[in-house]
Image (cartoon, rainbow over all chains, first blue to last red; front, side, top):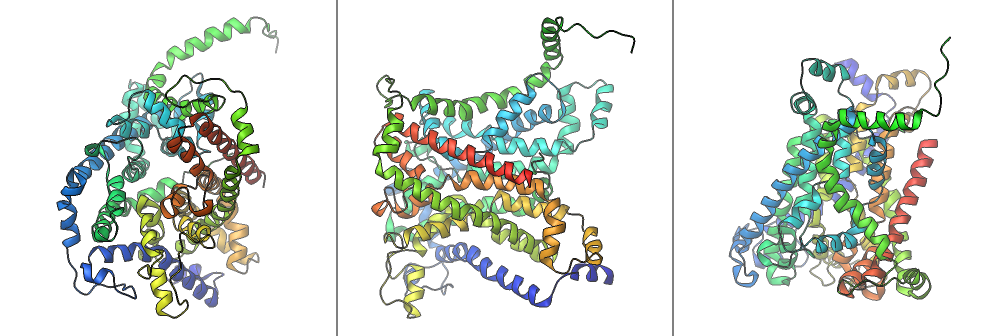
Length: 286
Length: 310
């Protein structure tokens, strides 16, 4: 026990430790306060929300903002629960299918040899170098020409092939010893069986990580620009519509923002250690 | 050694046959990558190809596009003053938020990694939460709101530092700084997580050995012992950070609008959505996208090459 202590203190001065802590606290406040303030706002009754100077605590907490969300039907034409359903539905379906086909593709790229593999892999890695935002416009043209606009498909299909997630799964699969796969092969298992019974159970942390990342991604994606039917819109888009309602809606929009940030954060908290374990293999070795 | 070399001529048809044979043998591999590849080609590769092809036309979504050669590019670089502003803003934002965000990811991953276990998990959450909460950055519009109810204005007025509210998001003196701050707030994402994981895999016995061999403080330790072990993660983080720092735009649009006051926070991405989404000059918008895409690829290639050679 004592040894571990000493080891940890190696090369660490007290002043240095103090400065490090100070920096963590200051920047931690910068990171955390906006979110905290939003949560507090969502519980404030209307007379507390616009007090000068702004308060970082709430005197009479109320759930009125949350219940207002669900009764906002009059101006939004569809009930808030509909946006909630759309977001949950789209997130679950695209995450489920996306992670599955990503994992299935990652296995051959990690462990098999087939003609064209290197070329395809290089192409996939190349797309890792630019983010989706830059091709948003041509991607919109493609979606429009395929007739996907204003359907659930446009919310699901484009997020299915995530290069980053496939890359993470593949990196993790590289760690599986070949002997394990060879043994299964000798037992007469075909590639699909090997994938399902040997590979998948061995990459559980990476699988869960990609589930979380993919869920966060889809959950946070709005439907602006591709969905114009009110009953198919997603939560982030609904949120910006509510926010556009101005001061009268500030409570409801704070409440909606809290609802929006809970799922990704909970998903991360539950899987934090698995995610770190996976990200350790995220490195690009050249 | 007595065997003669294989004749070289034989190889072409032989290779072909061999390839086909191994393709058949590996058909399950193709089945397994097929669903991913189909979606990948349609929604990732096809848009890139479409952007490049349409950038040479006057495509407007309704009429058949006409070939216009390099006209779009000529207009873009020679006659579009707003594009030059967008390039300038994008460069400023990318050159500040990119490296600073990258350093922040690394430094805070380093600091947090040395905390006791429980606090470490909590701090990780605090630092990572903004980037995973997605479109939540709109709350900054309340914080930076231009009236006295805005949080920043409220606090500064209360403390007597300013005597009238500042229009943070509409005054050209402050707009870009505000966007930079919010962008940095969002920047501790995937790279941060990757670095944090990287620190955990570092072989700590090296530190003891290092201490004996004359490593005297934490900076020498990180420079000589930790960094070399984390190269793969550092490279991955660089790639992630570069591609996201050039794609700044949505945040600027959410905070300052599009177009923003005097184009003070107008970025290339905003320029694309202005021409694509508002004016429907899609051919021209594709030319802008293509330019940004090329810049991203080149910068990424150069920087990762530099990092590898280091």
